[in-house]
Amino acid sequence: MPIPERRLILRHADEPGYSPDIGSYLKHGGYDALRKALASSPDAIATEVKASGLRGRGGAGFSCGLKWSFIPKNNTKPVYLICNADESEPGTFKDRQIIHKDPHQLLEGMAITAYAIGSRLAYIYIRGEFPEGARILERAIAEARAASFLGKDILGSGFGLDIHVHRGAGAYICGEETGLIESLEGKRPYPRIKPPYFPAVLGLYMCPTVVNNVETLCNVKHIVGMGGAEYARLGRPNNTGTRILCVSGDVRRPGYYEFEVGAVTIGQLIHDVCGGVRDGNRLKAIIPGGSSAKVLRAGDTFAIRRRKADGTVEAISLGLEDIPLDFDSLADAGSMAGSGGIIVMDHTRDMVEALANINEFYAHESCGQCTPCREGSLWMKKITARMLSGRGRASDPDLLASVANNIAGRTICAFGEACAWPTQSFVEKFRDEFDARATAPAKEVPRAA
Amino acid sequence: MKLPADFTARADEIIARYPASARSATLPLLHLWQETFGFVSGQGVEWIGARLGLEPIRILELVTFYPMFRQAPIGRRHIRVCRTLSCALAGARDLYAELCRRTGAAGDAHGPVTSPDGEYTIEFVECLASCGTAPVAMIGDRLIESANTPDNIEACLGKGD
Ligand SMILES: Cc1cc2nc3c(=O)[nH]c(=O)nc-3n(C[C@H](O)[C@H](O)[C@H](O)COP(=O)(O)O)c2cc1C
Ligand code: SF4
Ligand code: FES
Image (cartoon, rainbow over all chains, first blue to last red; front, side):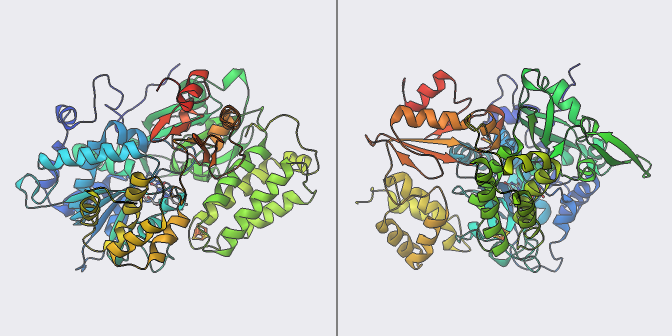
């Protein structure tokens, strides 16, 4: 039975006749939420966003309202808003849809956010490989300016905001918010150490800065539109709203789907929404939140806590396919909801090859500041590569785990965890395959992954 | 190389977007230079540095860090093939090998390889954020979804343009 989507952010994106220009947006109630926001106070907006329970859609799932509240109250410096449109986490392709199909929704979310946090200058940091997306945003900004939704005095409210598009140039680490800020300052994107460099206090140009993901900022528009309490009724307690799930890999109908958070389980998503595993194959594993998230193995059972509406918590034991796709359940399962990118692998897949592919990504993308990350990511790549080429050693699975364990928790930024988690989880959960491959000759067939 | 007539004006328009620090304009100016001339030359590094009042090394260190910038010209058709997991599962390696075979370019790793006739530059890149339509490629600025179908391989190679 197909499960109907609950589209909030992508509500109009794929409607026939809907286009990214401002006329189309205005016909669908566009910028009404901005008008409503400007008629109330910045604090009132922030209160609504807190009440909504919105958690960041970029990866960490941090409370959006709380993040905004970290801007010092006695601040006298300019405040900056940055939209993180770097979308580089492997498996993730939702921000691209929003930018290409409904750019004004993002601009409206940004204008409201800027009003709430007191920012008069904002940047959209968009990955360099989205040249068309950058042009669409530039055009949308010009349209919004001409219609007084951006500029010196928005709709005669006295509040002004300029937004500029800033293109990256192919480095994944620019998605990490402090790396992004360094990049936007015109430097190499070396992430900053926290503390003290929390963006809300010492961000862009050492001024208070809020960095939010594209999808997060779009949600702000809907929160203002419907009210924080109403928004909080979507999804589950502590996991509110809708979420765009990006499904790729071995399913019949890969793609992006939007549901209330936790409304579908992993099994429902794969079978009912995506048409099942391809070619009638069996499910072997999924990576639930972008390639940095720990892999989950089919056939395992997981202890998941379920928070009930009355606030009490019950613990239940669930198989992989019965886990609801929400922040807390995936954390309980030992992984994370991350960026919403779900990569499905069937029983024909070789887990050593899959990890080798992932390790190559992280070795290529480490910024190189921290020794454990720079050296460790390269080692992990070399070890999985040699296992594939028939030059592995029996001790390699242990060595892989040991290298990964020496990265996580010992680096400046969370890339350290992001590159260690795949290796830690793949080796732990598919130990037999790694042991067998460590001493096996190279495969004859060309590598699939 | 001679600058186009409006180049300085466009550069200054970019710099104006960063009132707090002109240095922020480095990345966009590098994009502008590369889009205009095809790659970032020593002259480009010097020019941007001078325009922003920065030592040339502050520009060069970005050119050498960011994968999208190059210091030498490439082929007329730039084909980027995603090599990351979802695309790999969908056959990115075979796609890359086929494109190399058809153009005569020799490559097997990161980094651009150019066909002997100088026409094509093929490059493995990381996740292009279109994993649901894997395997994907980019031809210049254009995304090609399901790039391994026969028609789309032809599109990658520019047949029918
Ligand atoms: C290595 C790394 C890469 C990241 N890449 C992205 C990205 O591409 N897009 C994104 O929105 N957040 C990314 N993040 C998360 C950001 O650091 C930041 O938490 C996020 O943009 C905050 O927005 P949110 O609170 O709205 O989720 C990344 C984090 C790390 C550690
Ligand atoms: S953990 Fe890795 S990516 Fe992050 S700052 Fe250190 S070296 Fe750079
Ligand atoms: S893995 Fe190729 S587009 Fe994401």
